[in-house]
Image (tube, rainbow, N blue to C red):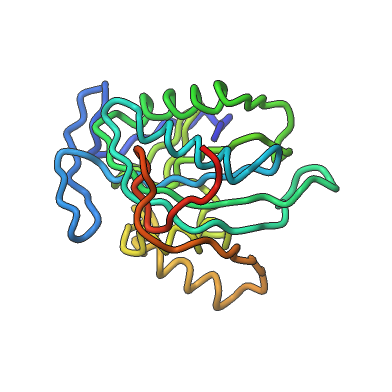
Length: 219
């Protein structure tokens, strides 16, 4: 989620290498201080997107200092922006808790993207895997390489629909609205259509994945 502006603004009670205090923000019923709740967006439209997202989720859940919590259903979405004629995207959202700082967490997920073959050559172009930080506790961050909350999350149904499945009560620290409230507001004023892909419902998947819906693709 690169950002080219010069503005530097850091308002955050999450753990940080710069000495900021710890956040105890959690989802109701999930008291896990001093970890911060982090809402992620996953997407892919090259190769085997379901398998790649499953692999990315496993890798994120295995980062030291990170605990995977829930993964949403999958959504098939037409590309937004970028070159014409690229394949549809498969999207979902994931919820983790972490004791890492936002910058360190970004380093880790970008390392995962690179290890999986992500090459950043074209803005909004086709990709093997994409992992975005949507919300990180109550952090508001804008630096040359990191913007939290994600600046367009409230405008995208393929982000809001899966995010509402797994973290409807998480609060956007700028808008002061929950994820579910943002989705409801988007639906009330938008004609955007997002097709939800049918997935098998059942117990959490085996391995490091802890999800609301079982992943049926190959990992």
